[in-house]
Image (cartoon, rainbow, N blue to C red):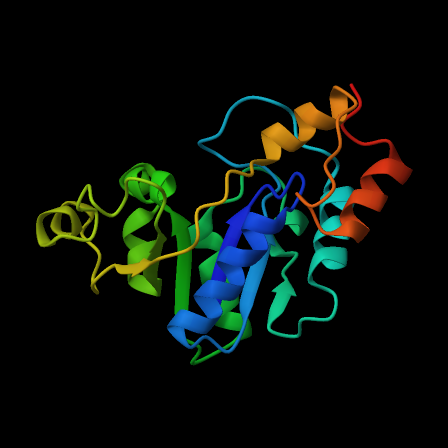
Length: 198
């Protein structure tokens, strides 16, 4: 099973394409989308309330049984550590093989993560390409040795989409349209709840 974490503030089409492409390319039964309560290595804007991010994720994956929202990190207080999440998922799903889906930027910071050795032991790592990557050699033997993953890092090619949650929030705040950047039910939820206007 795949695990794709993030703030999902808001969830957008690039998130969903990555999840579906990973499921298809890696032969995953399901991909769990795991919204973080607090991302330890990210600073910046405060996140929207957990209940709003959770509701938007549920709207976004409705109708796709292969994509599932996982609330584990939202239920825990404090920073959301991937090692804790993988350990809890392993208890809930004994015998499951986990694939952690990361963007190239997150992959490059993996050795800074809390209990990163445990993360690499509990899950295979699949790295989503972005423009200019994997040409930088992140899946080359020297790069993998530096990361120290127990198994080879999987490269996952995904069509490049210039969509970011921060841009979506800025567009809403500026009164611009976000139609076609997020699923329509998510856009309607953002409008109805008045999210990102400030």
